[in-house]
Amino acid sequence: MKSVSIDPQSAVPKYSQLREILLDLIDAELAYDALIPSERELVDRYGLSRMTVRQAINHLVAEGRLYRIAGKGTFVARPKVEMPLRLTSFTEDMLARGQRPGSRDLERRVGAAGGKVAKGLGLSPGDPVHMMVRLRTADEVPMAVERSYIPVLVAPGLDDVTLTDRSLYAILEERFGIELDHGEQTIEAGIVDPDDAVLLELRPGSAVLLVERRAFAEGRPVELTVSAYRGDRYQLHVGLDAPRLPATQSPGLTSSGGDGHG
Image 1 (cartoon, rainbow, N blue to C red):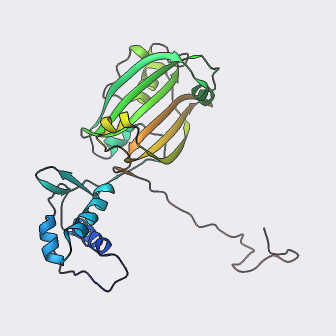
Image 2 (spheres, rainbow, N blue to C red; image 1 turned 135 degrees about the horizontal axis):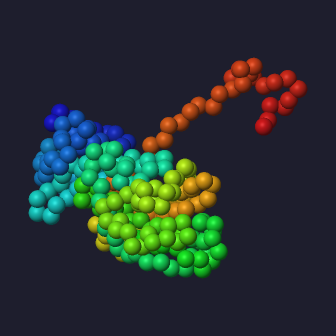
Image 3 (cartoon, one colour; image 1 turned 30 degrees about the horizontal axis):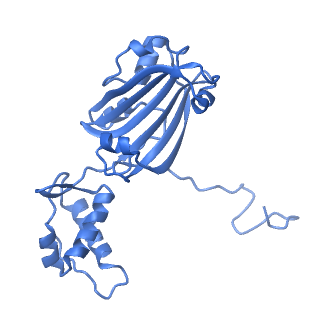
């Protein structure tokens, strides 16, 4: 571990300084699932109080960079998974990352579409839809709870098809001839539902990413899925392009005849 010290004169809180030291240690020296120095070691090494050390570690646990095992210590967590911003199934996404996807059926039934589901799928309220709740895992670690809705007219008999550890999108294509061509997705921060917290092995009140996705085939919506993804296991990554000015306009100049506002 590199010789780094805490600066008592810095405006940065001591726990934040220790947090950065631990992040450098995680990124440069420690492998996934490696044990980090104990609280006592960190107290002695950096001359900090036990409370300050615990605060730094708690922040990293909450951020998903570390995890605790009672009676054993605190370990380095695996890196967060980037949430795909494209139309792909969970199964395909995990396989592409070299992880083993899994799913467990929690509920399967045919029911009447409520107002929100009917609107999202272009149906009339009360039209029959397949309702599916599944726990999605990667390398047997709970990652998300998915609630999916598909019109019965689109996939008659889907309720008789086993979905455990299978890609729903692959089944729609192979068995029902539905080729998804585009989709739309809304992502927002949220607090985990108490029931989902148990399934996802999260503490009550933990952060999740709430994702609502619609998938389309030949211009019509065929799937609506509302999911809760573990906030400590997912992150978003988006490329940003700088806006380009017209070729005839240079930065800091406005065209003649205008007032410069737009």
